[in-house]
Figure 1 (tube, rainbow, N blue to C red):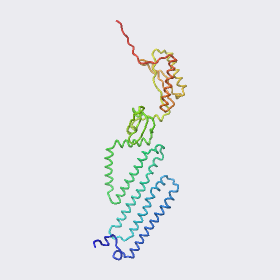
Figure 2 (figure 1 turned 135 degrees about the vertical axis):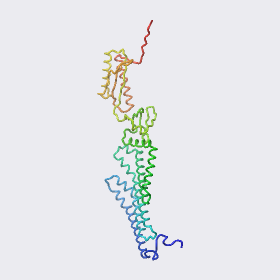
Figure 3 (figure 1 turned 90 degrees about the horizontal axis):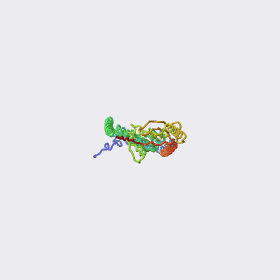
Figure 4 (figure 1 turned 60 degrees about the vertical axis):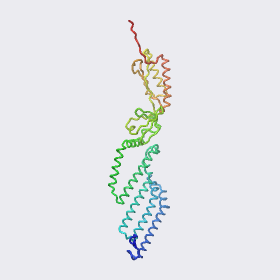
Length: 360
């Protein structure tokens, strides 16, 4: 014969190790173990896990873990039954039991990782204490889920490699070297990524806010992990990397309750002091009586003497945060200023040059 009974992995009858009666007893024991594993799996499927999921748990992650590990645990019952049944048989090939043990540990490790991988909703619990806007951010949720799954896969591969005897130290060192190379090559991208996470978590602004970053001012229309898009008043879309935003001063107009109304009013040098004092009093009274301004912050003062005008500083805060409303309020106040100047007989100044001609 080309193959002996020993080559077929176990010995049968009296020619092998223990004789037919002993082998039959072991075979019956193996079948009983498989039957018990099947019964346990069936009970867990129809009664065990449904009863556990129906209970109320203090930790919110418990139902997620129960749903995620339901199938892996059922498969573990089958694997344990097969392993115990196979171990009860009289295997004759040297090292067969050790091989079974290694395979059993490897499969159990993979099943645990399968359960953890399916429990990716646990990553969402990280955002449970954050604002509703952050919790509803699909980009951030996707990043957390992906990161969680990658970590589970990495741990599973490392654990599986250790079970089969691969040198974990060399694998980790190689992975670290590759990671270092990638991080150096994509340093700017990584900086933008982490800056994007900071923006989403710290929430200095949100989509729809009117912000100013450096020389760029406009409405935020999109925030992602690499950049932020801002639409200027002329409809130009400015794309600014998140790392630059984090290192710059950001003014968020959406967080303020008032908008500043401030400019310099120039009147002609022909204006007399009584006219000037009367004008400033009337302007101050108009601002103080207006329902559009924040009373107590209105300022009307003689600021300076310019080349062609006497400059009066007018400063107030308008009670609105909406840009369109601010423009309308500003328009109304400017018209009121024109009426007051006409009533007081004061003229607007404009740049002018006096030319003197000397006659010989």
